[in-house]
Amino acid sequence: MSYVAVYPVTSPDSPNKVLTHVDDIAATLAEHGVRFERWQPVAIEKGASDAQLIAAYQAQLDALGYRAVDVLRVESAQAELRAGFLDERRYSEDEVRFFIAGQGLFSLHVGDYVYAVRCEKNDLLVIPAGMAHWFDMGENPHFVALRPFNTESGWVPQLTGSDLAHRFPGLDD
Image (cartoon, rainbow, N blue to C red; front, top):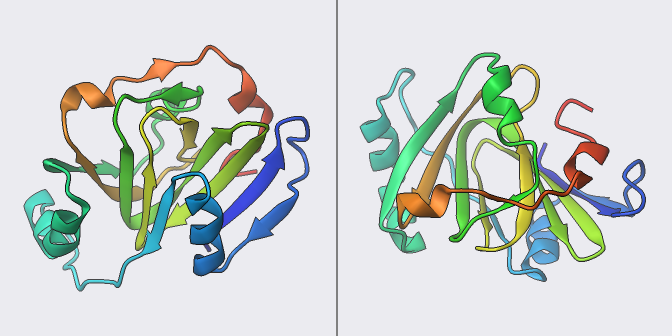
């Protein structure tokens, strides 16, 4: 189930609120310029190629307005890959994910709060450029996601140097 849990930065053990209704999640995140949507499922054959996955969602992707898209498939325990996303970072362009399968937890650091957003199949999340955040794919990751983007240089993380991310619950907690 998708949710957003809102934590004060000073209380990583207990969220102020947890929202599970798509409209509530979207409204809460929109207050900070973050876009959250649930897209209608599209029939996709098992074993579909990257090109077939992109083609299945081409109309929705075109409406987002990004120049390119690729597919990220993580289907096994990859500790090094996971560790690479667990530190707080910013990007020079929006970080966009649409989950075709599986799940992941994006934690957004906004002022004195952390918004932990669990995304799953059919969820779109658009984190605006410059927003501090981190991502946890869990100890046994499994997901397939579309990644719309404008330039590959926009993927280069700017680490904040904060240890905040290591104080908050992860996907498996």
